[in-house]
Structure formats: structure tokens, C-alpha cells
Image (cartoon, rainbow, N blue to C red; front, side, top):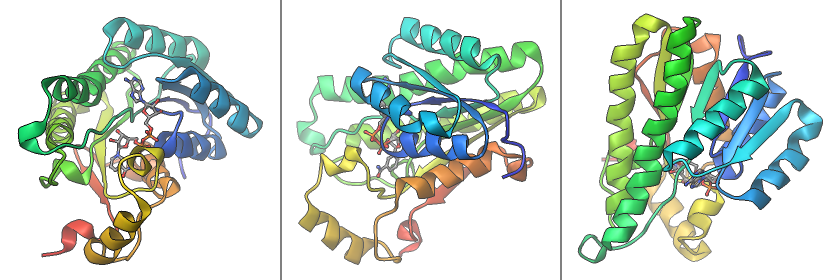
Length: 251
Ligand SMILES: NC(=O)c1ccc[n+]([C@@H]2O[C@H](COP(=O)([O-])OP(=O)(O)OC[C@H]3O[C@@H](n4cnc5c(N)ncnc54)[C@H](O)[C@@H]3O)[C@@H](O)[C@H]2O)c1
């Protein structure tokens, strides 16, 4: 894809699932990659797996903690010289009926998925705006930003927030040459939802809800990240790109 070779790419939530596939994709495009994640072992494994593809470095931290975010962004800047692309991907999911959603689970989901996304985007946006060289930021929302899936109150609310965060960032940062978009994937096969649903449930869900008849793969979302960060998307700004096998097209 045009415009990714040699670019410095920070992938937060880049050590598992979609983020890991995205790190692979950017390395294949010739970008230099810095990944951050919440788990030391996952980070080690990611670097060991991807190191043969190109320059990859990383740090562990919690995106809901402002000091951790500053450390990650400082580390990425030192490693990459400049962050040209931010893939703002870290997230968790919590499944519970609305009436039984515990306050702690609500707080944690919002803290990681919305506060974390804001802290990371603001830290990187400030750097991009300060040196005037622009950049591309892609936040991770979800189809759960577009409709209220049952049993996912906190997750839906957090992702709806990411959609509006993205639009507001686009409105304010466009004049600084910083393009901001978000992704809205549907059901993607990753450790996140493998931990929440069993295989029988997933098979039925694929048949009944997804016109393409299957869940998505992490590399199919990684391709969308690469596209939105690339020169091919130079006039795409403030958009929410749906990647869901047709799920939200169903009446
Ligand atoms: N899998 C899906 O069906 C799906 C669909 C739509 C959106 N998403 C979103 O895509 C993103 C990636 O999800 P995934 O399915 O690949 O999940 P995953 O669990 O495989 O990966 C999550 C990543 O986020 C990181 N992370 C989690 N909590 C963190 C924290 N507090 N601080 C820093 N990093 C943290 C993890 O270390 C990991 O790298 C999430 O934002 C998720 O909400 C997933």
C-alpha cells in the first residue's frame, strides 16, 4: 500500500489478536513498528514472532494509567524517531446483563476502552501537532458503537464513545494534517471473544447473523488499518469503516 514504507507506527494493543496481525501487516509493508500491550509474556512472544519481518520494539503498560501512556509514547518516539501512524487498538470486553452489570466492571471497561483510547490519542496527537508534520490516527471502535448488542452494556457504551471521540478529533485535527478515522469490526476470531463464547454458540451466530456466513479474521481487520493509515486513504477523514461480513446491513 502506498505511503507506509519506512513510516513509524505505534500499535497500542499490538500484542494479541487484531493488534498482533496489524503489527505483522505494517512490518510486511516496510514500516517500523512499536507495540504496546498489557501483558509482558505476550509482548515477548510478539517480538520473538515478528522480529524476522523487520524492526519491532515494544513496551508493557496500562492505557488507563496516564503515566503508563506517557512512558509508552516516549518509548515509541525514542525507538521510531517519530510516530507517523497511531493504531489505537487496546480494548477489553465484559459480558453481563444490564441489570447485573457490576460498577467495577463498568468502570474498568470504560477506563481501558474509552479513557485509554483518549489518553493515547491525546498524547500522540500533541506530538504530531507540535512538529507540524501531520500523521494518521486510527482508533478501534466496533459495530457495537452502531447498535446495542445485548449483554454488552459497558462495551457498547465505550465503543459508542470511541466513535464520537474519533469524529471530534477529526474535526479539530484535520487542519494540522492529522487524519483521524476509526474501525467498526463485527465478529472477529481473536482471544477476546474466544474467551467469552463457546464454539457451538459462535457457529449458530455466524449462520444466523452474518450474511457472509463466517466470523472475520484478524488479518482482514489489519488490512483495513493499513489502508486507512496509507496514502490510498488521503481524503478519508472522520470516517467509521465497518468490517462485518454484512452483519449491520441486515434488516
Ligand atoms: N474480536 C472482535 O470481535 C472485535 C470486534 C470489534 C472490535 N474489537 C476491538 O479490537 C481491539 C482488539 O481486540 P482483539 O479482539 O484483538 O482482543 P485481544 O484480547 O486479542 O487483544 C487486546 C489487546 O489489547 C491489549 N490491552 C488490553 N487491555 C489493555 C490495557 N489496559 N492497557 C494496554 N493494553 C491493553 C492487550 O494486551 C492486547 O494486545 C479491541 O479494542 C476490541 O474491542 C474486537
